Image (cartoon, rainbow, N blue to C red; front, top):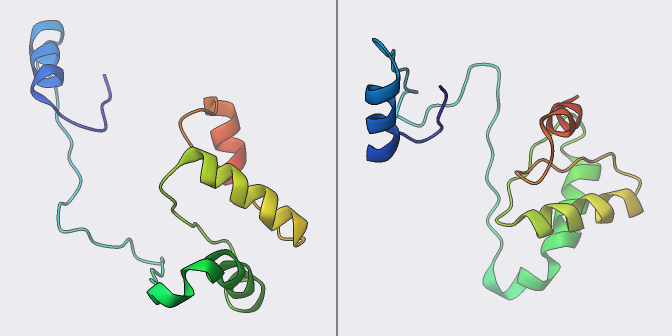
Length: 108
């Protein structure tokens, strides 16, 4: 059994249905894996309307290799995929509405 979150209900289900379950947790220190580079870009409130233009420019000029961009909503991820395509940037969306096969293909 795999669960991204260990709620009380999940722990109870594990104790009822599994014999000697093994629990694996990720370091809670929020560390970045070696070999990865993590960057944050703050946009001034007065420039919020230029968010997509700034993102496209950064990806064309600076972040030319594989880049993951986190957004708050599946719909916005889909919108950005289309927008990137219009600017001839290769992009894929990755979210919970996709099949496992589609998710793996997005990571290729």
